[in-house]
Length: 235
Figure: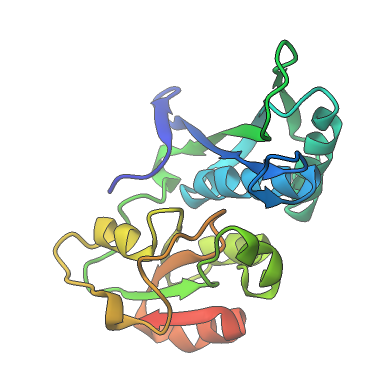
């Protein structure tokens, strides 16, 4: 199935995984549509890119930051990225990048690229059988909802735990195209409709506030217990 990553063979055993995300009109400038501090903006933007990378089974090795919000925003963006990396115990990953300092844009903008590596045999793409169980962890949130309903955002530590959990086939981050779009990519021959869950399957999930997990049915109770009130089944 398709994923939002670029896969480049390094050698006979390893693959390079490149993922990215960006955000515009969100930040501390007067013309921004959603107001939030730059640390939070960087953390949530990196969240999406690193989830895409991790979902393939890769280990991140480099973060590249693209700053279009002014020179003063750089340190705040880096600090936000460092906080997220510390949460995942990736403190040693170097952050590099560049700032647009020739022109002062009216709205805040940021882009982040994550580079990772994975052994070919450990690549977690196309591992889901057609009869596997499906659930969503977390609630799809976008814009100010991300700030107001933070408790319903799937923690990255939970995402990382389920990626390597026994009985789990794949964990797929959900972005602006919604849950249904991603499930239809996972299951092209399985008819999944909007009414098959207690949450909206077509709503944007903003900075990947939720993710899809596919798993063996015998592990459902364990996964439900781990995810708690963030678990939403898809029938």
